[in-house]
Image 1 (tube, rainbow, N blue to C red):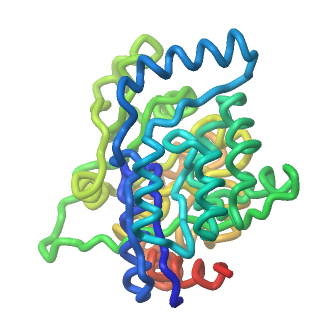
Image 2: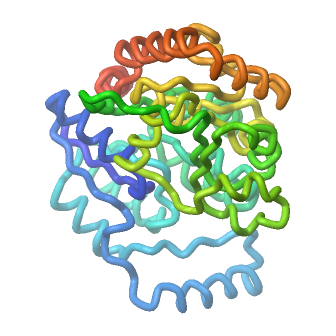
Length: 349
């Protein structure tokens, strides 16, 4: 593709946007990467935001207001210097940039806007913010690519927006040449959620390890046995990879809101496959459309089935390792970021 591309990464706290940028470069696309959060912030941002929110809610009676963090001059300067033909947004714009300014810059420079929607599902519990995002930001885009089929359906039914289902990928994770001891029976990495607490309580008899934030806030709801198995720190990058390698079963439990709308193809699935791990995750139709259940990954539909499958696969190393290998083979074939970006490039007009 002989076009100049700018990536605006709205979720730069994780490596997804950087890996996507690397894959564009691997396909010889002229790409500039910018983490939105790292651009110059407005002075006295928190103080001004508090005042503006009060004005918009109390005086203007607006349901939701967001004061963008980044100065207008910094995004104007970035676009004028890079002169992109296409801008690919990872996650969102509205928390960082004035959307009216983005529209003006689009008219001035003639670039096309595309969104990789990674975070709409995280707004399901925040209706006012979700409506703001759908109403004010999504119409700016030439096309929207969503990690979730359920979310894509929701977006497409709203004002005829152009959204396609585009599942995540991952970067292959290099494994040590030396044998790695499987120290954990079950690994779960993620922040606290009532559904997660409920399901994990059934697994306390095993060598279960939990990493993530916000568990302390829910300590009164968690049994002493489960509390002992929780590490209240987040895992990313190399530290996460090492824990994946050391675990017999990597457990994926989607948040209650995700599960409620029958979506669950999150990034953890592809990270696990990239690490040649055995994945046990919530069953959804989206999952069954992408993978052969029981051959490339495994799934569960209830707490009872989860307990049964953990028990079975811990007692059957051969069956577990066979599924992990087939899942990894499929990942190498279809779900590396290089493969996903090759598909994405076909969608750019």
